[in-house]
Amino acid sequence: MKFKSLSELMETYNTEDKCHQYFVSSRWSYGIRCPHCGNHEAEKKIDTFKNKLFKCGACRKQFTVRIGTFLGDTKISYRQWLAAIFLVTSHKKGLSSIQLAKDIGVTQKTAWFMLQRMFYITSGGNNNNKLSGTVEIDETYVGGKEVNKHKSKKTTEYNKIQGDKAIIIGMIERGGDLVMKKFNKLNKINVKPIIDQHISDTAIVNTDESTIYKGALSGRERRIVNHKAKQYVNGEDTTNRIEGSFAHFKRMVNGIHHWLSHRHIQKYTNMFCFRWNTKKLDEHSRIDLFLSNIADTRIMYKEVIA
Image (cartoon, rainbow, N blue to C red; front, side, top):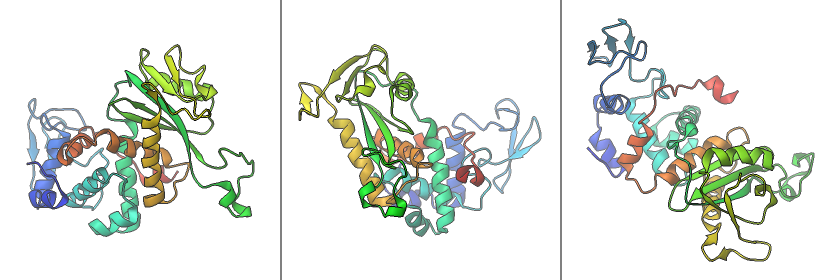
């Protein structure tokens, strides 16, 4: 059954058994497969027990739908997980761990770890297709201004443009997907592999007058809008779309999270891009997509804080 709101979701999946079955059908849409030996239930029977355990008829090992996934071996109920996934994927500017903790009835520490687990799912992206057609590229800096910091907090090696801000490169296809990547240092050598990985060789690339793209496009057609000359649109050439996505991202940072560390900011950009790229989907389809590839998404707490 489809749902459009949190209340409909909770009404549709009003028991642990229904939520458990939803996760089972999302993970194994073509039948249950043993995570230990790979046996499919069509090949050799997989027994189901009342306590949500499965037992493989081939290797004789027991398993649950949680094994090897971001759900992990936790005491968090399936209903709480489903509600959390709905809230995190549907709120356009994201959700803080404090708010999530209040909404589903867990501690802030637990909610933060749940967020990190969900972010991990989007770290690999949900679409391996390269951006094509007309692609806009630009860079932005996320973080506080050096001039506003206390003397003891200022960056040792002061950089007028960057300071201690995180560098984010954004790429957006006209009418298509958005990709954002964090860089420690912005130069042609670092940017070129990311462009080659995410942008088609035949794409037309719109940029501003920045010199870092001059040798990083590998022969792709480049069309420039000169921001220094106050030129923001030149016919169909513009970078307004990617700059608009940066504005939305910074509203998320400033309004919801307030501050993101260099260590974790890429995870938040990944989830932001997932929400952006699925904004035309209904809530049910977005969650189905989110849960469509959850095998091998287990992450331990010590890995997150390492």
